[in-house]
Length: 171
Figure 1 (cartoon, helix red, strand yellow):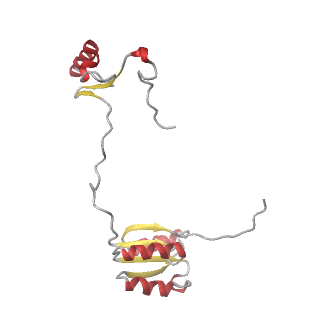
Figure 2 (cartoon, helix red, strand yellow):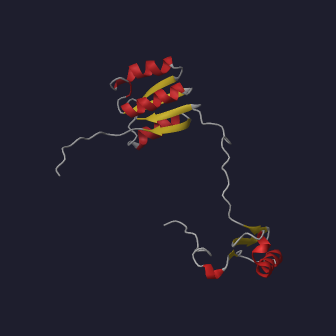
Figure 3 (cartoon, one colour):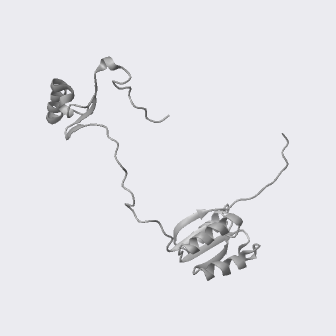
């Protein structure tokens, strides 16, 4: 379980209010605590029944609008690794990245260029403007993966490698 709020005055009206105290009380915090206790809710604009006292001030809980559009949207750049890149899911991710302007895509699979549809996928991605490397690499093979990582500096990694095993259900 994660953090839970303490039951406040709404849960127990007889309490009258809730004051969250600092872990260490210095002179300024002590003065603020005394003001809140002597003035009651008036110490926090007269409307608050839950306050947090700190040396830097008396604080209340507020909902605030989140600022939108603060950061810039992510875009693929540099060399992007897609494990299982020649498979159905990896191919879909590669097309999306190429369409979004990826510079260099490294598509790995256990069969590399010999994987079904790999050369056609490479041509399609190159038409979209991406440079494409088809690499033989079983990501479950630590040495093969280390060699691939030594050869390229990746700015992003999409893990889409997997093995399909279909079996009849016995239930």
